[in-house]
Length: 292
Image 1 (cartoon, rainbow, N blue to C red):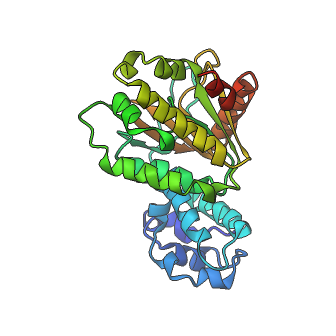
Image 2 (image 1 turned 90 degrees about the horizontal axis):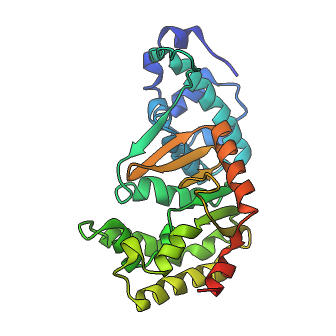
Image 3 (image 1 turned 135 degrees about the vertical axis):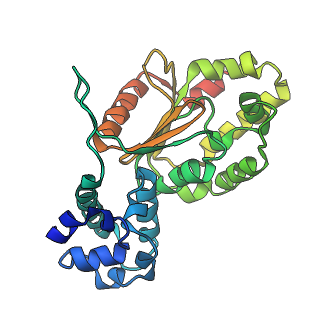
């Protein structure tokens, strides 16, 4: 994989290169198929846009997968190329001041301030990536796409407009069968589910019919879910787990009423391993619902 003195001297210009130009001028010998290199899409996105965040990088890979001549081997080579480009662009950024008594770690990510506005950029994107990557999903209560309108309203309050959000969730439920090859782990917090089904806290205004509706959605989900996805219920606080989604190298954390998204392979592996270890002590969601 080649690097050039031109880039060392002109890091600022690199972010404005289209992906096509970067491949043509900087990586002419990279083993990418000629048919893929010639795709017009690669002329429409720049290096800076693709490397702006972990999510924008994964969006780029997702778009590439839909192109002819681009399989997982090509994606792997593209990932290596983007890592090289990212390293070359590091010269544009001032070094962080060292923290006394600690080791400074580089961080690149995006904060989405609320769940509703991040619907397409975060939740829907993760749903699509679940076709290709093993995942770990730890929702705050019920998995988002099967939450009933009453439960969503109880959690988010009366002032939030849920119309488009509910439409989006409905489209995911209707396309659940398309994820029949997905593999992953869903960890649900027992304390939160207990609160829901006991109609306590924010759920106090729910009716018995609301609970029946929510339970029916969860049962339907389990009846139609991929056999490669496991649902476990446990005390997440005792297990030191937080609301998060780990998808390949992407880590999405629920913080401050929104999502923090970053790309970090070691962190993703660490969090996924912790969740999987904790899940071994949980019970299945089917067992939990049978008792309700």
